[in-house]
Image 1 (spheres, rainbow, N blue to C red):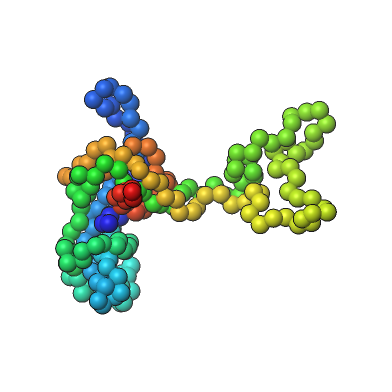
Image 2 (tube, helix red, strand yellow):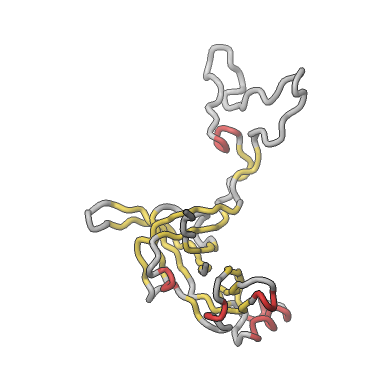
Length: 211
C-alpha cells in the first residue's frame, strides 16, 4: 500500500454531473521524492520512505542532510514511511505524485485535529447537561454523578469527564476521490479531513475488504 504526504488547503464545494452540490476538501498531495527503500532482507520489512516540503540547509542538522544526500536530495521537512509489497518498484530520488490515486475510488486520511483546549463534557462528549431551572443551581452544564460511595467507591478509569479536547491524530476512512489535478498536485475528496489549513496529512488508498 503506497501513499503520499499532503497538506490541507481548505474546503470548497463543486457541482457533480447531476447538479448536486458536493462539499470537498482540497489537499496538496505531493510530489514526494523517495528518500529510502527498505527491504525485508536488510531492514526486516518492506517499506518506502518519502519526503515532503523542501527546506533550506540551515534548518537541518548534519545527520539529516547526510540521509538526504544519499538519495541525491536536498533537505526536506517531513519524512514518512509507507509499507509496500514490492520495494523493487521504487528507487531513491524517484518522484511520487498525486497520479497514483488516478484509478482509486476512496482514500484514507490521517492528520492532527484542531486543538480546542480544556472543555467540559457538553462540548467534549455531547452531554445534555442539567435542567435550566426548578432547583438546579450552577450545574447547568455539569456531567452529573461519576460514581457511588458504597460500590465501586472510586471513579472508573475512562469515565467521560472534562479535559483537553482535540490536538490528536484522527483517521478518516473511505473518503471518495472527486477530482485529481495532476498539474497543480491537488486532490479533491468528498467531506472533511482532520485539522486546520496547512495541516500535514497522510494519504493512503483504502484497503480492500477481506472476504
